[in-house]
Amino acid sequence: MKRILICPVCKSKDVELDAGGYTGKYYCKNCGYVGSFVLEMTKGEYKEMMEKEKFERIEDEKSKPKGVRED
Image 1 (cartoon, helix red, strand yellow):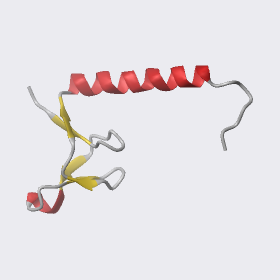
Image 2 (cartoon, rainbow, N blue to C red):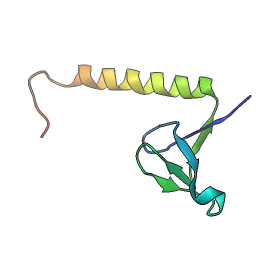
Image 3 (cartoon, rainbow, N blue to C red):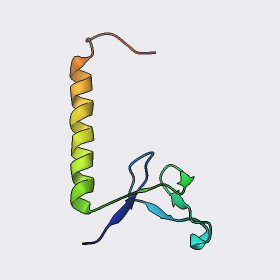
Image 4 (cartoon, rainbow, N blue to C red):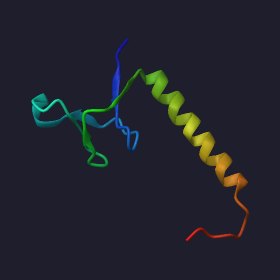
């Protein structure tokens, strides 16, 4: 099963080896993250993670009092 690389900061799939792999680090084209730590998962695991995060955002929005701004 094919594994995909995921940015740990923005959860983008647009990750590639930095400096052609010589540094052992990865680069995220979406947010600019450079580091040796990335998430590696299947497409199914990625879809499940994104659905869970979407659900958690919806639940957070429901728990906030209406009409109150966070500045």
